[in-house]
Image (cartoon, rainbow, N blue to C red; front, side, top):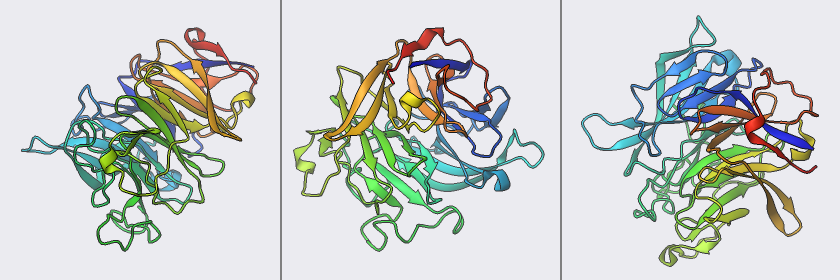
Length: 374
């Protein structure tokens, strides 16, 4: 079956995320790292660039999630790095905004409600992704705070929010409450917001829209990139290994202190790339891609399609040259889109033989044509 990456729109400035709002509008929202959210084919939805620290490294406006009841309450959530006034330190800030009452294509920049602030010791490894899970709670990815080898051993320690997946209830109180069934609730030595830990820089994660399984792309140190997974039935509390492990290899033996580790389902070494971009379990209308986990490497431009088997997960490579995949995202209809941070574009996975309900016209697909076997 033929499949292409079909160019949908260009002209974006460092796009790092793309998503639908699941409100039936069919709109796609693109996050620009410098602090803007832009509607594909439309105008700027939100501009908070004056509040955002955007370096050429890993800071900036990094994540966007729409409330499950966005069509009625107009709430959406962002994750960005903020420059603390009068200090050389930066912080991660997770905030809620609301759509303008007068214009559904314009957010109210003055409606910010700050949910969470996390001090960042370095300017890299900020994570930044956030999604609502099938349980209605907001999940937030945080990096280990930066620095080579997690010098503060923060990802493994439960007394801080770095190197974690967090899980909070934004509807149960203001600005949020901690769900009572979070795995470390009641542990006085741990932060109750923590859902999972032992992550270095979980740049992109996602939930399978069919069954709720969680997939995490965790950027490695110097030799290994990894994809971690958590079944929808999990009660949380997984330790994904960093900094004891980098991928499937021991990185820091002194940090291997006897905890039960959840090892990655997929690993590749740095002969194939240097920075994994986690993707989605595809549930759209391209038959040969359905049920495969699509992920990429930002440095090399490689794209893989992963699938479980009798001996574990395997991945087939589908290389795309000259492409800097910074993020994947789903439309309201479950079709898969990808942002190219280097070239400022958004493209979708497209097959001429499949039926698409997305509203976007086909663009110039000639740059990235390839074939996937059904």
